[in-house]
View 1 (cartoon, helix red, strand yellow):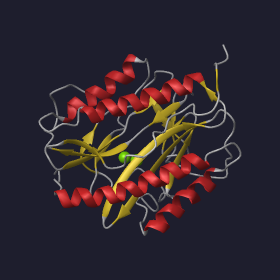
View 2 (cartoon, protein in one colour):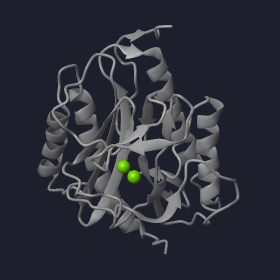
View 3 (cartoon, protein in one colour):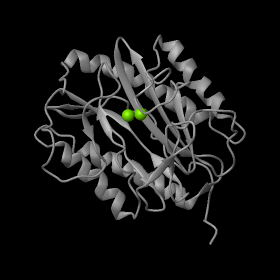
Length: 271
Ligand code: MG
Ligand code: MG
């Protein structure tokens, strides 16, 4: 069942969403050559503590997972698409990092993700991340009362496919509310005019995941969480929690500063 939210509930969800926005901005600022993924997890955890918020990720154990998730961020490096577990790995020059983060505040959840480059970016990574951001923007643009979920999926998928990227099979966005994962499922590819009707008060996470090599398959590591591209190519992930309202889409996890790849140097890919 899709749970509609009142205006007051959406305002409260935005409070949670802004904790997420601040944490992702802090992680992005801290993500540099030599910094470990565990250190980035601590940066995000500090933001949660300061806000009096808790983590919907920490201890999360969906049916597929052999163990509870042990951290507050997912840190997915290079060919990892999503669900990377932060460890002692230290970021290297030219890495592509995707960070997924959630916060629970006042009983409401916010969920958002960014991809970024570390040090000197590869031109191909900048293009991949910028396309993921365009796909997310296109999905948000279709999150209109009277549209259907398939309109969002189609908008996201069209941007990804036009750029030649793969879309991991079966990894989708979702409804958000008191639970991190609610109905409906929001696929990253689909038919316009299909799927559940978008109504005032629906809150969803739209989250494009793109595979540079163009394949849609993926595999999981022995840890049961980490999902990697099948072709070894790099992946990007962007996500916002969005309220669908009569006044248009409201991005509850919007960050003040626009974040994108290639803020530093960019080098051409080796042939
Ligand atoms: Mg997320
Ligand atoms: Mg999500």
